[in-house]
Picture 1 (cartoon, rainbow, N blue to C red):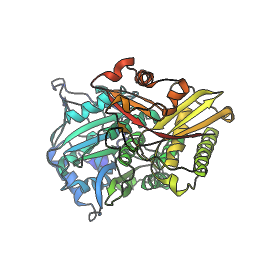
Picture 2 (cartoon, helix red, strand yellow):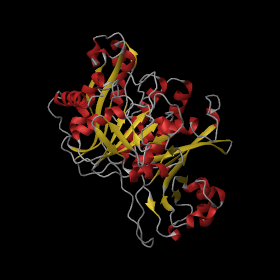
Picture 3 (cartoon, rainbow, N blue to C red):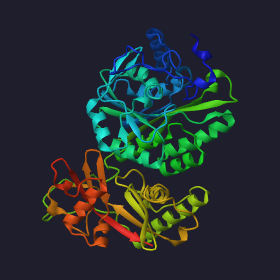
Length: 504
């Protein structure tokens, strides 16, 4: 088969016919769905294609640190393969034993996240790849919105087309295959926090699979892709999300990309490098309607200072010094409140995100919640528990999410914004609770985990409601959809944190 003659619809990440498992296939085997279409079904021919792409990569780019994640395309290999190979070339010779593959679904629509493991083996013409059962199980248990949904994977290609490259550059590795359905902000945040919670070791790499703009003239599509890649290189995830929402940037896997990079940032990544960009027209010769492809690496550079303070080691409460909070003066607090309000005004008016020149202190990575109140009552509250972006960007992003993504309330309208008051809580790192007597009502907020259940209440909530320690713990359990006394269970994990709280 001449793969240079693949029809244009195979360039993109959409397949307009269905593939299924053969009737004789074991339930534990995920058979290849797009062998013979997106890539050769013959093992020798496939090996030749992949090795030629890897051999064509320019001299290795120096990465002065630990690779945490890659961004790669997923179209037919004849089109996107030379770009993807630039990322996979970086893994040659590395002792990578676990690959967390995250991509979108193009044919099966669902809400949430699907992990097609544990105890499932993925097959390609180059052999079989097992799932990492422990990591798959930990992701599934992390959140009720992370499940095993067979239909999301059985005909999907965004993860499958990565396997031949991984099978070529790595030895003895396992995968964690993750597909995202509807790519809303809440789902993006769930996956980002779930990936962060795995605390992957240096033998693990995360991979986000996406193609960029689809079927535009190259003269129109290339500037769109350049805008998105600039956000990546600047690690400006809030702006990238706004551009994706507004359509100024197109990525069919934008949600998985956002989640993977947020997790990488939370795990210490401080650099993003674009390795290669191309479009389908460079292979087809037709620049009138192209799909964009990019390869990028996200890594933690070799330097002494960490991006964010680690959680404090548990020690007895007596004489314990709590982790340092952000030292925000009055001017910086007013600046953050102004950023939150101006962001909401612009976003709800449909004029995009404004540019901010934040002070140096607010450019440090920080975790925060934004709470919206109307007539003294709650109108929305969403935040990030880990430092995944500069503080001012975190506040801007959480302000939008609190106004539009809190499932307890309808979205805030521009007309009612003038009657809404904004409260910001800048969080300390999380500290494991060893003894319930450590918890001080009025000072500490709580986050409780049990299996896939999680609940968080900010420090001010207990005081506003007049709760004592036991009631605060019980209410946090209820927030996690657990029984009131679940905080006493041996398999419950409790964290406390502090916050700098200020409001309009």
